[in-house]
Image 1 (cartoon, rainbow, N blue to C red):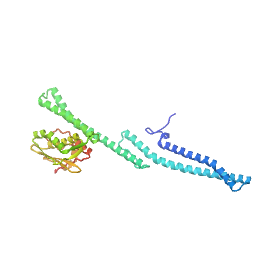
Image 2: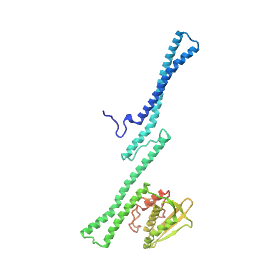
Image 3: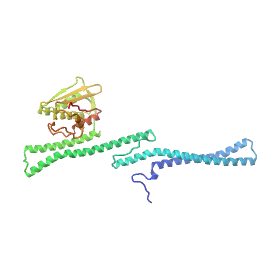
Length: 359
């Protein structure tokens, strides 16, 4: 034998509505049988008892009364049972449909998501507060999955674009070395090594930004004095700043500025901000780092004496692989992911990372 069912959906007899309706029918039938048995056992004997107490002892009168009672009782019981069963069936069907329909729609939406669909319809109303909460949570999950898929698709496209330049440079140098066009000098080896370092840095940054934007970072928040974090970050970049003749001015509060953060990740944020500032600051320029504390928050401000950022690019600089005008960039060492990673890490800490510039 072969049963027919829609692919990906349960057979009609196995669906929730059918099973719930069957359960309701069994409950109603059990109640009806109990009512009939009780009525048949109790009502005639009770009627005969009342006749006897009323002094009716004529056998013909008693028989006629009992026959009339049995006919009336039978008709009333049959009509009442039919009406009550019909009403109970209709109410049960209505309740079953109200309960099962959103669940069936959620099941269809789940199948669509599992099949790779990004646009699904989720019921926005339910039989109870729990069903509405379930629908709302499922809709949020569906939107989040769609955003993750779209983000990954953009990430792959951007990554493919970013890999072309270092790979093309390496291929050209290796091919030139093989053909004898490019001499095996320290400069050629340095160029090849720089491209390899760029690929390694790019792969690390892509992993970090994917984890940060999907809130998958393994954070270990601890109470930390932000002044110490800023001082450590400045100490790490000072050699590079000195080599470019860029001075760093660190201004700290007199009192502790305690924040509950992951020391390593927040140090990574400050390192990214300082690296970005130094990269866009001309020789003999200056980078200012100011740590200020309030009862409810601690702010770290990193500013530089570079050429500034156009107003239309202030939000774009936090996008993946965004780079400002190359004429402003003093070197090509950035992956275009540093500020994206920094903002995502700060957001995971419940903070905010913004950029301002006079233009």
